[in-house]
Length: 93
Image 1 (cartoon, rainbow, N blue to C red):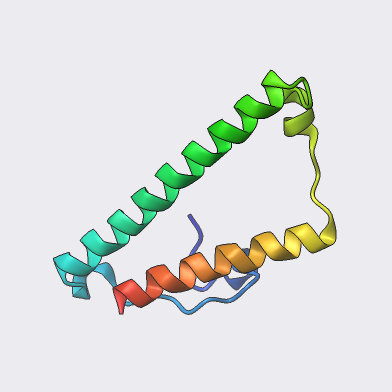
Image 2: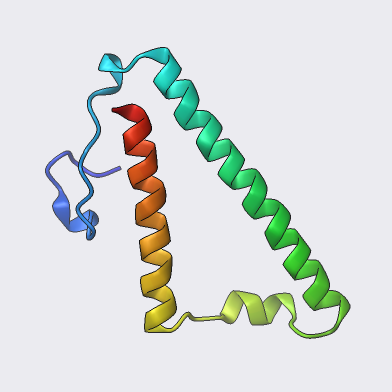
């Protein structure tokens, strides 16, 4: 966990949400559900992809672990991550 003023750990500078004590319980539940749904979908899709790749002898687990994304892929991942965080912050607003 970083200190409140430590912007070096926040390279994309998203706005900070209000203090949790100010949030209504329904907002917190909405955030938890959004994250839980995202995790479930990702786990299912990842499991499907890994299973198909292994079944077809396309990639091993070691290949997946050793993968390093290109700059374009890293940028796309950052964009998707930022959108998710922005949606969570919207739920908290």
